[in-house]
Length: 157
Image (cartoon, rainbow, N blue to C red; front, side):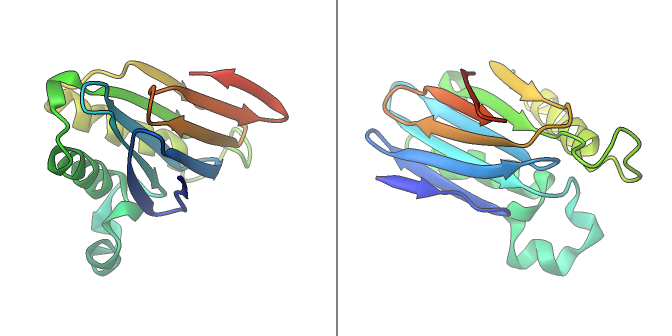
């Protein structure tokens, strides 16, 4: 089954599923994969910190990196994933407007992600972060294979 992960969304899949998210610009795309139980999850978070809008964070925690990442890990645990086996990949966090983007959302999204992972002793296996491009990500749960499509080019992560 193919599931589309929209902005401010998260999905969990099992072997045979493909998770896809489109238009990762300054947003963070985070993929978790447990190869033993063949479970994977994808988050498409838009903003770094939920403290900017606690009401919105309560109704949609996946919109924010700080709340979305925590919930993605919790959902993976509920599906049998274990932290010590998880492969973690990050995509996005670009500055598509221009290099002088006032709010530097992409950079801040990545900084919050790194802090959360570091505090929880989790390492990134792979990343495709920054730049000025938009990315689409296909995440195949059977294998953990992650494909990025950007500007007509396709590459493995």
